[in-house]
Image (cartoon, rainbow, N blue to C red; front, side):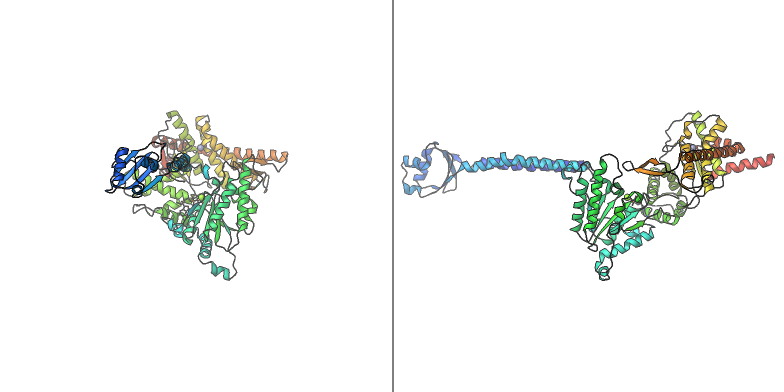
Length: 620
Ligand code: ADP
Ligand code: MG
Ligand code: ZN
């Protein structure tokens, strides 16, 4: 979107008014020429000059007679409107030969002024209005409501020479397979003959899929940068407008534009916004989307392969795309991007710390180890937050600690230190978090506790940060059960030590219940019910959320499932409670330290536990 620049707009406005003012004053001066060198004389004097042959030229305009003398000075006088100039001279007794001595011009002021008046009153207002509209529409475009050209494509064309700095594959870390696939496309755009000669067909459409922030948009830009061809970029969400039919005509003009600039790349970002399965929406809005989608299909079919036009598209929801989009000859090549693994994360961190001065002892490998599950965008954000943190402290370089501290900010949002809580509430939160931490620590399949804090962050009043040691792609049955127990640890701790529970556990309970439900209905991990799935969730398109659930099982099974979920929750709640009862001392000590320090790092946490153990040994 265009950036709104108030000062620049003001200057152009003032310039425009100046130009208009100058034009108007020029026209008026044409109408009423004021010549200060002219002197008014009487008719007699003029006749006298004619008779003595001093006059070179006479111009008559209406009743004004302007004479240029032989010495180039000008005089003027007026006649009566009813009498012609020749008649007048005759009356004054001027001889016809003397009339022939000067040139006589009679200006038809009627028609001349008609044109001038027409110009001023007929055309100028329109020009004025047009200019006003133009300025107005420029403004409006700045705010994103392009109502004056709604049929046109709003795609941004990026010419290769204009990209500064040009993004290349080397700016995209990791994603090796994806880059290899796209290199092929780049080769083709650079040297199509090589492929056509061998009868190779290059795909028209390539679909990039992957979780948000994994680099889809970045990779598409890099492809354009490598191929150095014009790049037309439009986002699916921009198609969805208030006027029906706009989306379709945008698609049409987008493809028309690209075809004029071959070879070219069209990039449709967030394809799922228009490319969802047709006929599944509610309300009127899906009509517009269907038209847009149909137009995309028409355009994809409408050009020959191998003409040098490649359509790239990106989505993080390939599962909900209309099957028609994925038919051969359309987006027939799919490139799946994954979240980065530890090596990928290290590379991405390296790229995003290129222009940031780091202290010598900063280990990006260490940071990569601590950020499993982070996307490329998260990591870019992390380095940026670390830089901001260092700058705020007036440091010249970013330290390891700055980066580590920023991890939580990226995960949970900024700390809310100003969030005032009473001592009583602080105690509840401390017991709650200590409960999570101790239960997690005592279960073999839970991720290690990295940090415990009772400082509010984002939505949470306090938090216990757990992080796996390695990247994980699969989760075992026992791991899920342990996680349910650990989620219930906060609730169990409040109940055990404070004899009451608060609303603070609501989110934990929700997560635990959802996990238990998946355990039974999706993962087939319940021994009683067995390996099958239950329930088909159907998407309601316009919200993009799973709302309706189709029950594909009998009411009896429903009761079984309910019972099983209840049992899982209760069993694990009991497990959590038992762990807490066995470790009363530890919970109390952690709570005490939390109230004192507010935040405990892993090392401090382990130290406290070790001390308690040692004490117990010496006591017994
Ligand atoms: P999406 O997949 O949602 O389109 P983007 O391409 O917009 O993600 O990525 C957002 C940002 O994250 C990029 O601008 C870039 O800074 C960073 N990023 C993501 N993946 C990578 C990567 N593989 N290498 C370098 N930076 C990355
Ligand atoms: Mg994107
Ligand atoms: Zn909790």
